[in-house]
Image (cartoon, rainbow, N blue to C red):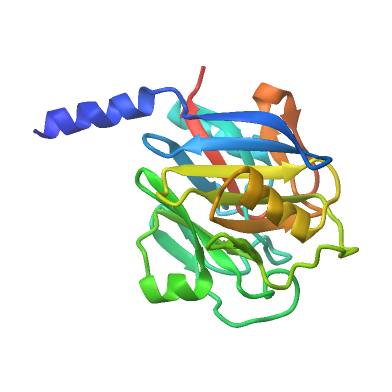
Length: 244
């Protein structure tokens, strides 16, 4: 039995990554979308390297994965962070919590409640509103808290204004109702929260979606010839596969 389970595990690791990135145009705006079918996918969060210092860049994560014989398929920044690159809210990596859940409202986009948590478990992923997360206390192999929520139960965040003049390049993640699909998106140019949330709700059809950040939003998608660079990031989310 143990040998059989080990064989299944190794086969899953050897399977091709269940993801693809593509360019999408919707209602006059352009986005890059990376979609993951969670069954068998190796989707992870990354913060600090073996030396205890933040990875900061996609290249540093990809180089660290070489020791496993694996590589990044795609990646993007995954939540807000302090000046030392430590997460603002909940952060869980390999099942270990290093920063606690923040349930109060506060300044900035993170504190624009309702905010939420992106939770990765075996074969599934969920975006969960923060108070619901606190009540359920789900077991997450990886988790990052950010805010605001873009879509909550099929509805846009109540504070979003259609005619807002706050426009930034933005990135976020949405999940299907059954948790089997995670969809990451980054806008190609500055958009409002209302526009970005509507893209997740109406085009990507994700009933729950979470804003990850704006202005510093970056994407690693080698299949599209894209590897955004800039100042060091905090949490990074990435899909991992065997190195070619």
